[in-house]
Image (cartoon, rainbow, N blue to C red; front, side, top):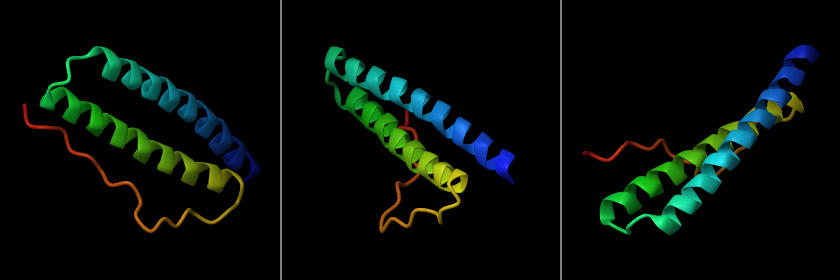
Length: 84
């Protein structure tokens, strides 16, 4: 069980690094892209997905720390891509 917890902690740490890189990239894109309705919608979908990933990552950390899962009143919802 201890190996599983250690693996979960390492995965959560690496996933957090990935989420941060994506988040920073989206912030830069948002500053440099034309502010059309479509680009703003796509950026918002991506930001929502990062929030969902962060929520799932917190759940993974809780497993690693033997804590109960997070109980949010409104957990992040799954996002669906915009119609092209």
